[in-house]
Amino acid sequence: MDQTVKKKDCCSSKEVSGDQYDLIVVGAGSAGFSASITAADAGKRVALIGHGTIGGTCVNVGCVPSKAMIRAAEAVHGGTSAARFPGISPCAHAVDWGGVVKGTADLVAEMRHKKYIDLLPAYENVTYIDEGPARLVEGGVAVTERVISSPRILIATGSRPHMPAIEGIDAVEALDSWGLLSLPDRPESILVLGGGYIGCELAQMASRLGVKVTLVTRSRLLPGAEPEVTEALTEALKVEGITVETGLAYVSVAKAAGGVSLTVERGGKTEDLTAERLVVTTGRIANSQDLGLEELGIETDGRGSIKVGPDMATTRAGVWAAGDVTDRDQFVYMAAYGAKVGINNALGVEPMRYENAAMPWVVFTDPQVAGVGLSEVEARAAGHEVKTSVITLDNVPRAVAARDTRGVIKLVADVKTDRLLGGQIAAPEGSDTIQTLAMALKFGMTTKALGETIFPYLTTVEGLKLAAQTFDKDVAKLSCCAG
Image (cartoon, rainbow, N blue to C red; front, side):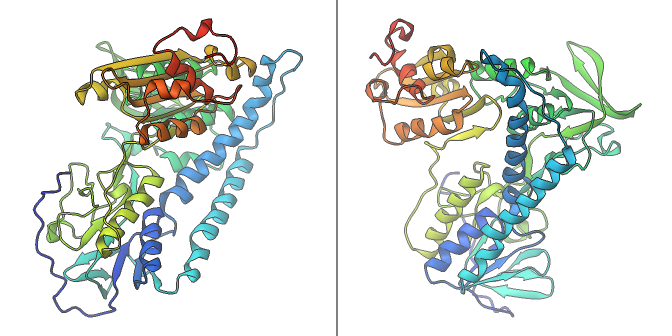
């Protein structure tokens, strides 16, 4: 958002009753804790206001449980996929869905204590308040009948799953992502609505744990990813037996014999898709309702996300925001980072600006999909004269030796300067590989410099070097480690 947004006068000078703090943080998830710890380390007295389960989305219902169950599903799949190696016979693992779910819940409880609850005693000047929902008022925050006052407030209330307005959807007990992850009994089949990060991850996880899965989306899978990357992932999911239906319009949902029926439109004709359960993964929406934002002149966008500037300040002086409740990137690490930016500016500790040009992102499918920087479309839209490099994983020795060449690497660079602008990868170890490219972008590397960098042989990350060399040569004609 343009930093020239006009801010309304702060009313923190108005007399209010209740406790006085240097900072009030509303929301006790990753952004809220990051803000509170940053302020506490600066010697400030902080009121951390939570409501509901401490820890927020990531540890309780998002990153931690989903990645734990994805790993469990990978272990199951490994028994059957081992047959790709000569001399190895496949084996089928028995899956106790309820046992996996319970084990995941136990892990979540452990992480919630270790990374949130048990941290609070270490910060004496952070007071945790969980007495009910919070609402911003002039000069502070009201929690039930209590008013807590401070000249500075940071909002970090996160987001919740978005339920699309499809006729009949309220009558079929649709599951959101957490609903699936906490389901006590394994369903025979599911329809996964939405082909974004969460939809793709959970569709493959459920399939590997023995569920018949149909993944349905209006566009293509991962619509923000490079087409080559999306194609590689789509093919990988189909090979595993997942039905992928793209380019559809959702018409209605209804109960059906044995489950639920989704009516879709394709090419002007309607058809019904059926399964035992419907899982909706069509994005998330900010938890900004009932906070009193409008009354205080704090602007939001059409989805309710709080508008913030590069300093994470809202349109009201004295109020900052961070994390999924804002119009910024919806990743837990960016939520924590944004909170740090906001608090440093709020307290005058160190001027900081929110920067995401070298922000890596990951989709924990198999192959993993990861990216950083600009896509080809984004680079052209930004005015760059673009050149691209694309190599499939059968050009990467690590993938060949592992007998798993599913995937592709694509790099985007500026023609005139040769500077790298971005890149994406679909590979079994893509999540770890992408950080190297993030560092390359952060420090302005050229494709020539990346192609000349020494990488260890038989690693997936070596694929970045090969992709960089592909701008100028055919790497299929190089011997091992040549170039």
